[in-house]
Figure 1 (cartoon, one colour):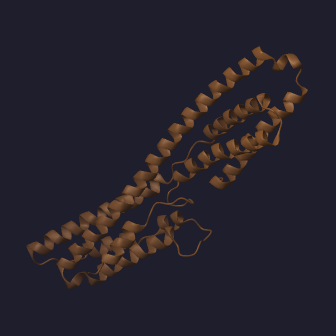
Figure 2 (cartoon, rainbow, N blue to C red):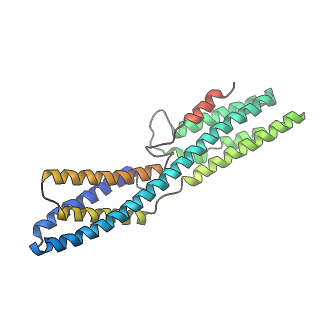
Figure 3 (cartoon, rainbow, N blue to C red):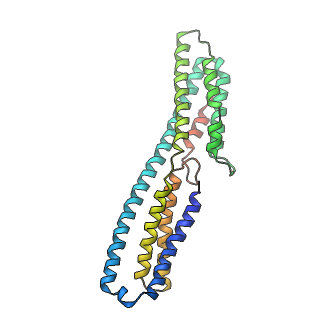
Length: 254
């Protein structure tokens, strides 16, 4: 899949190129094509396209933000479950020492996959998908042999919490497969390019206008960049916060 940075550059180039094309066309078009009635028609068409593009961009930003927030909420809930699971294992007794250490290793490796101290080329999601540490933790919990009713209840709670954490893990992996259709992006880019052709066609030819058109192209391309980034909250440049997991890690073993 093409990265959001490359799509940003391509879209900025296409949109600004459309604006320059409009400026160039205004030099060669016959005078009657740029009179009042012709200009009015062009303004109506560009206004309609601008409305369509604005609606689509607004809906996409809202949808991307909702998706980003859902992943952030899942991370927060996972942090709470980690603390509860550690507490349940601690109250069970010293037999759970190995399971609690496994839990700590699992959280540490998860943080390092998605929020590494040093930037790496390989996406953390692939490593996260291959990881089996959560399944190993569940196995250790199932292997516990409770001797009292309290221990049986604590093991049941631990199994439930670990199951919910494993479900959240696969849900994150499934959500990460979501991507905007390429056709959708191409159509949106076409609208924005045609819109800026219209802007250039009606604009004066000077440095101020060219600068304004460039800022406009960068702005709408930036909106597309933000949308694509928020649809990959674990692998992109704009990531969800790892504060809930780090707080949970800080509280483990207490």
